[in-house]
Every structure is written in structure tokens, then in C-alpha cells.
Length: 371
Image (cartoon, rainbow, N blue to C red; front, side):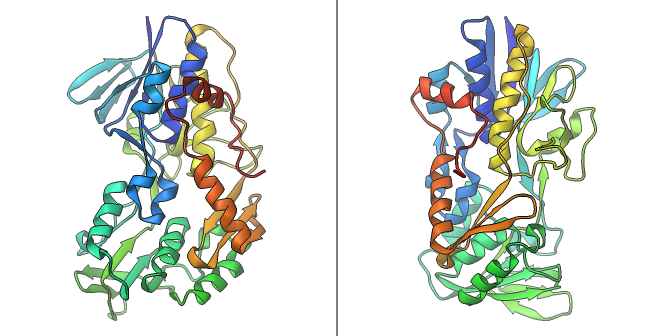
């Protein structure tokens, strides 16, 4: 019997497992997913500050399709020996799909332990426990990328929000296309935007800026930067500036290793690389899982062919903004974009308890959310 191991229980890992199970059919191929938690966490939902809404039990996806979960954290990968280390065990593989996701870059600041994040359900629970049912608090959000903007506009419904950005413009990674809509939304929500600022330190009472100014706050939320899981460093292959493994059109990294999701740097089209998002993680997982299984079974591989790039940014009570293309041309704003955002949050929820539907969807690289 051949063994296909998948490391990671997020979008890329779960859909890799489903695609591999579909390709396997009745063949003598064991598909195992290794992840340390009971749940798949839908991270795009975490800005709503409802951890339970973002959890999907892995057993309700994996058991119906005959995929085994090993509930352990993978701590080592030995490519030369074709093994991984998890929970003190050594587990061999014939093909490996690394789909371990990304991690929030830790803040190298004095007092960083006083900050909060919404990168995980535990992080959201900690922030919720701190804020409780309070209103009228002051929250500082550091970073105006996707996560920073969504949590800032969400918190603005309950208190005063100060948004700090090191760059000289808001939302630098989103580019100029949606910026006027974002700036108008921040102004409408009364969010205090401070650009070109650096933080010196954080305390229980707030933070101190690089110029020595103190900013009192009830909570400081860190959102600045994501990086691929450090397991990528154990794969002898080229990586990009985010630590992602370079993968080809079949999402192959080496003879036995495939990569998908936030750990993989692959072309989304002829010229643009994928960004770290569920929009790409899901179809990457489907392609990588299919190809890892097909490679073992002597079947044709498929190319990674995602939908055209879009973004949909939640702006709290100010609605949302939906953009198309790599220049992020604004297509929808306000309530229309907000309705689409809600649809996306529903569509990304994988089917559960229904093997036929899980396997059916695993064959479709299209996310089916922008139509």
C-alpha cells in the first residue's frame, strides 16, 4: 500500500485530502491528514469575532471520504528519508502535500505580550475575553492590510478605533484602486487613521510611538504581516520572501513533495503569483491532492488553474468593497459588496457529512463565488 500524507488542516490541506480521496477510488492508497486540532478554522471569518462560527469539525469532512486524521503537530520533515515527525512518531510517505498554512509575523516589540491578534480562534477568544461585552473602549489596530482593516471596521461599531500604519498611505498592499472607498469608509466610521508611524513599545495601558507619544488603549491588536509555516525551511527547495516554496504548474516542489496554500509560491496566471488567501488555497489544495494521488497511481496530472483574481474586503457598518483583477478595479461597494462578502463567507464553508458532495466539489478548482 502507498501512503499519501497531507500536512495541514486548513483550506489547502482539507481540499488536498478530498481530491486525493476522489482520485484514489478503490485503489490501494492510504490518505492521511496530519493536523493538531479537531477543527478546520475558516480564517476569513475571524474578524467577526465569533470563533465558533469559524470552526468546522475535521472528522465531519474526513471520515465520510475515508481519510484518516493524525491529531498531532508535525515538527520535522526528512525529505531524504521520506518521513515526517509528529507527536514523537515517525511517519513515512510515498508522496507528501505540505499545506501547513501561514503564521502571523510576531511583533519584535517590548511588551508584545500585551497585544492581541485574530490569527487563530484562540487569539479571537482571548480578545473577546478581554473586551467582554464592553462598548466605548479604545482599541488600537496596527497594520492596515486586509486583516487590519476588517478588524478595525468591525470594532468601530463598539468603540473608538485608532488605525496605525507604518506606510504613508492606508492599505498599501491593496494598491490605489480601492483606496478612496476604504478611506471614505474609515472616515464614515470615525476611525482615527495615523500614517507613517512606528511603535516603540506596548504596555497594558496602550502603546508608545517611536516619537515618544503615548497612545492610551484598552486593547492593541497586531495584524502586521504573514509568513509561510516554518516547516517550509525543512524542504530543500527555493523559497520566496514570504518563506513559500516555489511550485510548478502541478504544484510539485520535488519528486515526492507537493505544496499548496500559503506555503506555496505558484503562478496564478501567466505573470502573477498567488497571494496568501483562501481564494487560492482551495483550488491549490484540490490540484495538489489530485496530483499527488495521480502521481502514485500513474494517472494524468492536472494544472493549477484558479479563477481570475478578485478581492472582497469587509468594511463593517460601511459595507464592503469588491475588486477585480490584479490592479483591483472597484466593481461593487456598499451593501452590494457586503452581500457578496456574506455569500463568500458561506460558500467557503466546506460540505460536511456528505461524501458524494465533498468529492464532487473536490474536482472543481473554481471557487464559484464571483459569479
